[in-house]
Every structure is written in structure tokens, then in C-alpha cells.
Length: 228
Image 1 (cartoon, rainbow, N blue to C red):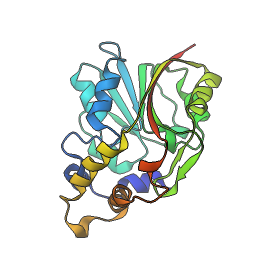
Image 2: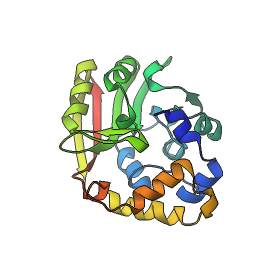
Image 3: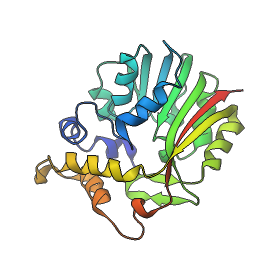
Image 4: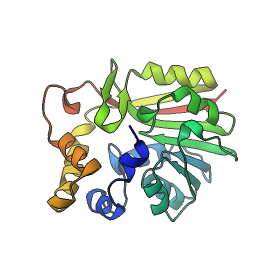
């Protein structure tokens, strides 16, 4: 999947209607950012990997952190004005500066080669906070370019490049509340503007078949890894 196209095919003004002014497009929204805030030392230099529409970066900046974002989406990179953003595929990106903390919220499940991305980051990023989704066996959602597996795959890929998991926590039943919030925002959008990514998101919220996310054994995981 062309993730640049996928995250750029609907205009920012439509996402503002769907997500609200905070522009948090991830499971549990603002609650996730509140959870990771306590893991970031005061006045940190933060690299937001897969920064989306900038909701997380803006929140961290308001709390005194020096934030730089990286996104594969040209539309997202152009939209964010409150902190510097690099338009790049993380597989091809190597930081030119050092960072205290890297943040990766629901970006891991898009990565074709997570170990390559971590290998690029580890010399330059001291601590890494990952928020993602895990399940007991491999699961793909091709229409969103997502591949999900057991948490051990994330832990193993971190270890092999030089990061050590210091703690992790898991959240269950995270999808239903998020789905309601997304559906509420999507219902505010005129039907003719429900196209592309937004239309797929609406279908995801409405689908209740046996293979739906809400029926899978998914957990949201928050990982703090530190460089060895």
C-alpha cells in the first residue's frame, strides 16, 4: 500500500471535522497521549515517528518538549505548522540530530521492516516509546496497510538492534470507545465527502462480522524501551 497516498487522499479540513481540533487519529486518542506523557522526562527533545496530523506533537510541545515530527504523508507534513516536520519514509530516514525520546504511536504496525527502522533510530534516539496493537497470532488488515502480531515480535526487534524493554502495559477493550468517537465525527461529514480513507474508516466502524477488530483478541500495548 502507498501510505503517502492513503494518509493524504482526504483534505485536512475533513479530518478536522472527524477528529476534532486535537487531531488525534489513534486508538484511545487523547488518553494515549496522557499515558505516555509520564514516561517522557521534562524538557525532552522528542522525535515523533509517524506524527500523523500533529495532535501528539502539539500536546507534547505544550508540555515543554522540543518536538520534531516525521511522516510519510506529504499532506500531513504540509498541514503541521507548530513544530518542524520531516516528510520521509521511516525505512529511509536516519536522524541527523540526537533525541532524548522517540515516540511511535500506531506506526509500528505499518512498518515493512521494523528492525531496519529501529536500527536507523538507535544511534540517535536514547529512549523509544511505542504504542501499538498486538494479538496472539498474525493478523492483517490490507485496506489499512496494517499487520499485527504478538508483542514478542516487537520486543525481539527492539532487542536485536540495541533497545531493551524496561516496561510495558496493555489495554483491553480499547476499540469500542474509539469506534464510537470516530463514528460520531464521521457522521458530521456530508456523505459526498466520505471517500477514500474516510470511507474505509466508516466501514471499519460499522462492520460487525466474525473477522472484525472488535471480535479479535487485540490489545493496545504501551512500551518503554531504552538503549543498551
